[in-house]
Amino acid sequence: ISNNNFADQETGNTFIPAEATHVKVPPHACSFLPPDVAEAKKASPKRAFNDPMAREWTEALFDQHRAFYPDVTYSLDWASDEVNAYAWVENGVRHVDVKGGLVRDADLELEGISVVIAHELAHHYGGPPTGGSGLSCEGQADYHGVRNVMRRVWFGDSYTNTVGPGIAQMAAFFGVPDSPTAPGGSAGCSHPAGACRIATYHAAVDLTGKPGCAK
Image (tube, rainbow, N blue to C red; front, top):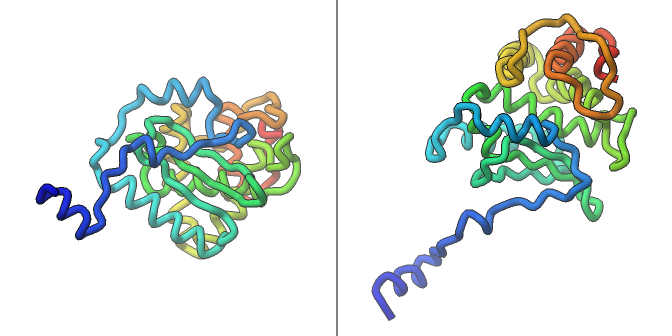
C-alpha cells in the first residue's frame, strides 16, 4: 500500500468529483429564471470559482432561513455553472436548490441571494395562485417572498437594511431600473418580465397590492 493511500485510509479522506455533488432537479420544479434568461446570464461576469464569499453567504443564509423554515431541504449546487435556483416537492419533502452560477454572479451579494432564497421558499408557502406542481406561481412567489418570507427572517431594521440593497442588486441582475413603476401586461403563472419583478418587490415592501403584471 502506498503512503498516500495509507494516509487516506487513516484520515478517511476521499476524493469526490464535482459531478457527484450535482443536485438533480426534477422537470416539475419551479425555477427562479426561465431557461432562456438563465442561459443568457451564463455570459454575465462571475466571481472566481475559488472565491469563498458567495459560498459562505449562501450557506449562512441557508442556516438563517432553516431556523424559520425547518421543513425544507436546502442545497447549494456549487459546482454547477447554471444561473438559477429551484423549488420542488419530492416524496413529500420540500426542496430549495441554488446553483453555483447564480450565487457567483457579480451583480449579487448576500442581500440579492436572500431575495432569491425568499422567492424559492415562497413557492412552497406563498399560497394561490398555484401552478400544475401545486406550488405558488412566479409572480406570487416574488410578492410573498419579499412581503412575508423576508419580513419573517429579517425582522425590524434588518429587513430594511437587507431588502433595499437586495432589490437594487436584483435590478442590476435583470438589467432594469430599480423602479416601483409596474409595466403593463400579465404573466399568468409564468415568470414576469424583469421590470415587473422589481416593481413587485417594491409593492411587497410597501404592503400594497401585487401589480397586475405579476398576476
